[in-house]
Length: 619
Image: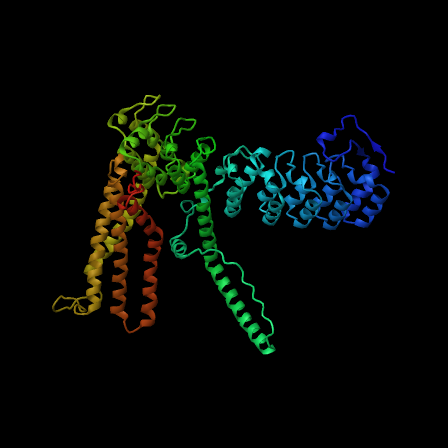
């Protein structure tokens, strides 16, 4: 028989299901060896002789045989052990406070989970000792959704109520964080109070939303955005089961062929959609629709709540991460939240300015002028107003989304000038606790960025000036050394009356004039004083003109070269066509390297702006 050893510090209250006895490991080693190797016959023989050994523990981890079998995923041994154990035995925890069900849920083994839950429902609500998570929360964190669905179906609603602890709120936050919005909506509909309850990690469920859950936080390429807008999400249609009876063999064969063809076409369609990425884009849009539906449901709940504890950390977190839809919906549900402050005594719009979230900042235009002024002129703990915050350097993550230090400086100026338009005149000269006005703070914060912008502009201008000067030299010389030469009697070009010769002359002239303009613009950039405000319009305009004319000069130079080839060797097209193809390579390379920068610079300088002032005012 297994001889029990009763330790002095044994405490059954800390180990549910344990009867104050620790069994000698050496005597029970055959049981653990059998479980380790997956040999149920040997384990069964030992337990037949020593039935109480089923509760024997490993000395280092306090695990029992069921813990070991579950961790090793020996399903048949787990089923047999569960049959031999009592409900209290299933509540035994190891040194870290984990039950066997917690191990099974963490492993994602549905068969073992079902086996244990059928034996005891009490273990559903036993949290782990270290992380304070119930089995369903563990399964959700590991995205074991089949386990989650099963545990959710058998977990009593009372166990998820706020009165039972943070587990329901923690599960809700996990659903939101992992973008299982359908599950989250069902849980909220069953227990709305979970929205206002702290989870096991000290966070409210509303803090689980991620930027990727909303359109504003999802970056798609232009063609992906087009597909996204074209996709129409319909309500799910239940599977239709058709039972065909009393059909002849011929009819059944015909239907089998039809189903086979339909299945083949459906598979071909699925593979094509997967290859083009359409399925992925559809999933993204589906998640966005579900998240907005869930957010709308939550906002309906918070409309009737007078507490801010659960929503303040969520809205400030959303502002920092640029979740426009979240902030917009919450402020529409609770307009009074526009006046709340964080620990630095900064309101939502001040934080949006600090974090350079232009979409969220634009919501300030919903307010009337008086409210906008009050919000913009309020000071934080350092007496910084909104204009001071716009004078601080943008977060590095936001700057890195903009190409080149010059455009980064331009964006910073656009922010400063925009905030200047809504503050009172005296605010421009107001000082913070460091005795600095907003403009002084801007100059100090952006000193290095100005230097980097100047260096970037000069390096770009120098490189382009060299290219432009070479084109001027080539095209000027080409105008006087025309293809075919001149008539010795008249002095006119021999091919003067050919259409291709006129194409050569026109393209040569355009290339010469545009390259000259380009060089002059870049020289203007090189000799600029590079004051802060020059980065707003003056310097970008010169760069836009310079790059545009340089592109035109390169393109027309290639046209002139191609025209010359056609004139000289038009009868040998097998040489001319490949040469013209090669002539297009420099133009293509230039477009690939510089054209995106040119477009970005033009939009940033002359586009509609980054702020949406057309937000409809609230009555």
